[in-house]
Image (tube, rainbow, N blue to C red):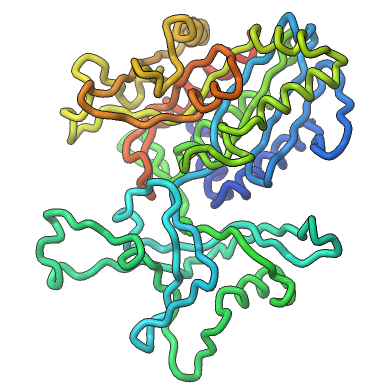
Amino acid sequence: MSEQLDLAKDLIEFIYESPTQFHAVENIKNILIKNGFKELKSTSKWNIEKEGKYFTTKNDSALIAFVLGKGEIEQNGFKIIGAHTDTPTFRVKPNPEILESGTYLKLNTEVYGGPILNTWLDRPLSIAGRVSLKSDNMLKPDIKLININKPILIIPNIAIHMNNKVNEGIELNKQKHTLPLVSLINENFEKENYLLKQIANNLNVNIEDIIDFDLFLYEYNKGNIIGLNEEFISTGKLDDLAMVHAGLNAIINSKSTYATNVLACFDNEEIGSRTKQGAASPMLKNILERISIAQNKNREEFMMALNNSFIISADMAHAVHPNYTEKHDPTNKPVLKGGPVIKINANQSYTTDSDTSAVYEMICKNADIPYQKFVNRSDVRGGSTIGPISSTQLDIRSIDIGGPMLSMHSIRELTTVDDHYYTKKSFDEFYKI
């Protein structure tokens, strides 16, 4: 089996074990610890050594890992890869049980981010997330992760006979049409607190100890390697766990250089990053400053370090769609298997400029991998990502890149085995500098 295929299959396993951002961070932590990284608590003083490997977390859903450089931080700075742990989905609301027509038990949910809603219909779904339990300290609830890990939900479509124009397009109402069916009940079925009872049984706790929860829906089925030549990766959450996975593999295999290598895994990119654990927060800046302080550097030396630093903002990119080629720019058309994509926007929806693009292009050339460039059609407004958001907190040279993919924000997204490998190789090369 090739190195590329091994990496792709490991990505599928990583995503399957990461049904929510909380589980993604837990998996990252476990992998880092197995590879010699030590956890630093934000509430404790940091004692770090040159060439040491460390990580810290925020809100159980964001994580910053770093390998401390052997040089002086004000001279050599930080080499940062940024990605995000969250994906578009549905969040379970409080008091979620809804009884419909005396028979159907549904769960009340709210859309998180911007999923392609119709791709969630008629799929086996499950629930995972974080549960806050009663503790001895009211300011610090006991936190448990939960994954029901069986297909307990489905959002059924309506038959074409009752909507004969469905293939002409239908607008799904987020409150009415996307609520998942969880069970059939009768007059002897106890509906009250159905979900809380399931949580209590799963965690082996008393239902009275459950204070609150952050629960999300996810596709139950695992991803696949597909294609005539096993060239495609088909799975949910490629945006952006593919970049997290590539960055994670790069940093655990990196050797100490004069600069400090950093992997920043933010949460809440899909809803604008405006949270304490998002890219719009001072989280990364504070952690970089703590790294500086722990080395007895002063404020000016920290500012010098920032100006000697570089960020690769890594979020998946759009490949040309074979059935919608007219949606793309006429002269810049990234394709699958064409290598990582440099993302460019005149209005700075991406941070790339000629200076930072040149850096990444040389990285790819040194790694002997292909690369591509993406711009939107001039009459189409595209999205943005963590790069420009991070720049509001950190004035560090930055570029936005991503692996090319199709079906972004579908419950099933598509990239290639080779593109994931190429991206990881570019990260390896970056951390070597």
